[in-house]
Length: 270
Ligand code: 2HA
Ligand code: ZN
Image (cartoon, rainbow, N blue to C red; front, side, top):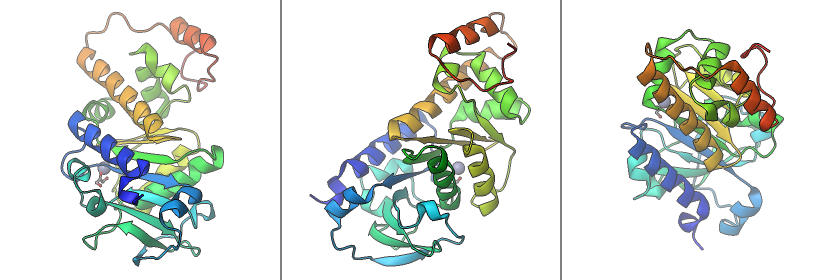
């Protein structure tokens, strides 16, 4: 079987098409990286003939060296991936020295990975250290999440509390809360490092005035986290200034008891 027909390419093609249709990924907005275990890569590329090397522009953490990532291309549009994955996606192996990536498949038009690949690799490294099963880092521009970030202080506890108080699903889906970064220049190592630092604690990081990062063991987990934040942010923004029935703290604590959740301390008074 060819790699283009693999479940990995299919999953990314389908989810990016879905995300585009949610209205989250205008133009070249958004990027995804999916770590693929060696045993699967070897099924498709037993000889590992590299097409070319691509500089990373930073030194990747040891935990992601010699690991394989299927990643979206820079300047590429989510809406176009499903029709032409081999141009819009690339499969790379991070070199042993951590400074470059070997291209195994894709980026057919001489392209390279997303400008946010530093943030992705640093986030993968941070998540893998707390959860060795993490495989996916997903970045996108969901409208209401960006609106909400613009309307509230840049603070993990405030954002988490407002989400938990607006939709009973929120605390159940992300009991650890959400990390928040101020507006920063994207595509840099600095925003990558700041994102990765938050990823030590959270699977979700909001980039104020820009979008969101989600992490997960699967595409479904990362997407599910982001869509729950976005749905909740939509509820928050539509009801902003009108709310009478906010979710009481006791209900949030009751949900935590029912689902045996370890919720982030300091968000709800106990
Ligand atoms: O890849 O979303 O953050 C385009 C972006 C940059
Ligand atoms: Zn972005």
